[in-house]
Image (cartoon, rainbow, N blue to C red; front, side):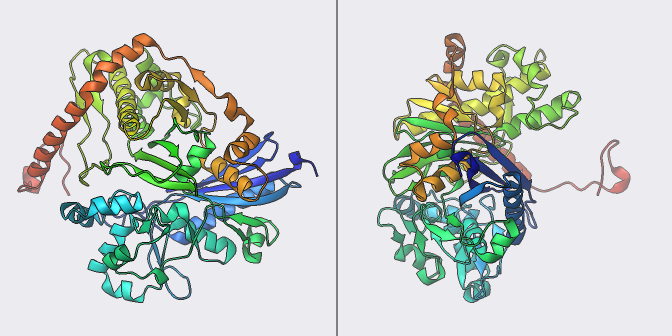
Length: 528
């Protein structure tokens, strides 16, 4: 059987969808399937999911990929997932909690307490993970404070990928990448930190053993029947979604940044050993034992511009519903001059994690005048997102050199997004074609290396995606770069001012509320 008849499956279990790809070992073909699932909010600030719903979706997309490549030999499957999730299991390995996702902010008070006490700095230095409400460390302290009976009866505390791998193989383990995102793992000594476990009130016997990201298990007979693969098929435990994305877009050289932009955005680079940010901003997670990914995620990416298009140009929404199509409303923005004629948007529609552990500044349009059109508002949204990511690159470059950037993600199908992002970065930029499946492709490449069918990570990604070596360069327009340079220098001051305005608005919102009697409701108001 030739290499064109051999494939490897890469599976990425994300926060809102699972994506699986079957990648030919000779790089000639890929078959990608995806399935979405709900993110539940039973209480404001709680963002949870049913772990078994995610597992069912994972098995379904894997089965579809196997069917798409009928007759091919599946040499292995490898798993990536969103990090920072937390699930409690009983002694029979069944969930006693939902999956608390990385978006769950119930432990915000815990994060603030750790920062005020000064403990956050040492915790970050030890674990590589900033103290924030999404981290398992803060979630476990929250459970200890608010659900002590549940804590006393919970046998295991695990992450999302740990649960998926257990359901695929029957083995309960974690791996270096996921462990390094818990806030409880000493990334320098490569062990669970006894002092931190005392702080959160769990024992190391309640946490899974930690394997390398290249660890190989075997597919169980039950899972094999569900997806159409032989039992015993190698299962590579893999890395988290961020490190997997960096590999999938071939941004694994020391001074190359990998910038992904879909609904959210992220910028990361690869270093040889754990690198801790003194400002407690960036996280550091393992890809392999000697490749660590340092960077940050922003919650306000393409979703901000999608909101602007929906709110301002509903008449230009694509009738086909094709998610791969470049939105027509971006054409309005293309007709507006760079800088949006003095209009600036701070794109914080969703709360971003601020260094102080608070929610950060609110979103805002600044400099709005009567001459501004909806095209200005849309372009300012694009520029605001790109300016935010440019600021992340500037701060990351102070920690480790980032001399060039690779772009990936559905947003960069748009010439406008590519041109603005390249001009704001103002460095050599290339676009990867791994628009939607970079994490699944990265998982597959790591799996190929793990089972010995590639000599190294670079060889693995080049083998599965030969085009990665020929990523399209983007010429940076000097005039466009100059237009944005001055705005970039003013961005921190604008964020600080709007942050203060946000604090004032929070104080107003916390004040007495006015309740209108039904017979005095102003015309046009809607009562409850």
